[in-house]
Image 1 (cartoon, rainbow, N blue to C red):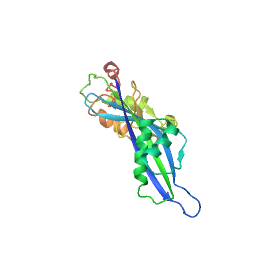
Image 2: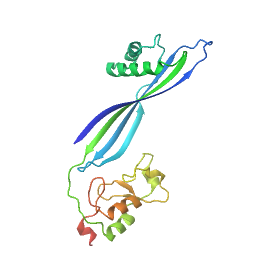
Image 3: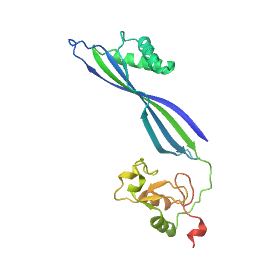
Image 4: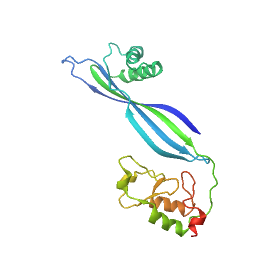
Length: 211
């Protein structure tokens, strides 16, 4: 089961323009989209999996004749065609311009965030720690070089740091679920719990551990 949630982040920066060179009040709106993928287990523990960020449109350049929420919203509506978003941005931009003496250049950055939360199913979790055979097999069979990760950003799901920047810490790919971790991070976890911290699958079946 997946759940979805949306949010909007608004930031801006302004600079004043020379008054004697014919500059007029100018607003540049940059729209970006960001998708965040999260996983939540039955205990309410949330893990950030990955994020994807990209511009949605080319920068929108506005040169409003009046600095009012309604006028700015109307200009935005002609550009993006979304009345609720246009109205909300018009109000925020107008408030931001109140204390700016003209002429000014206002750069606005708007990020539309879509959060996808994956609800992990309930699974039986072994309570014992991993055996020494598990640690040995992971090192011998599941070690991954950072250069093999490719250009896609990969994050250790325990410490949430970038795996591609690991130089002195080996990377382990779990044999069944293929989730990636720093060796130090996953080994510390396995000393207490013989399962993947994200999906709770055991690294190796018991029959394999005793062979």
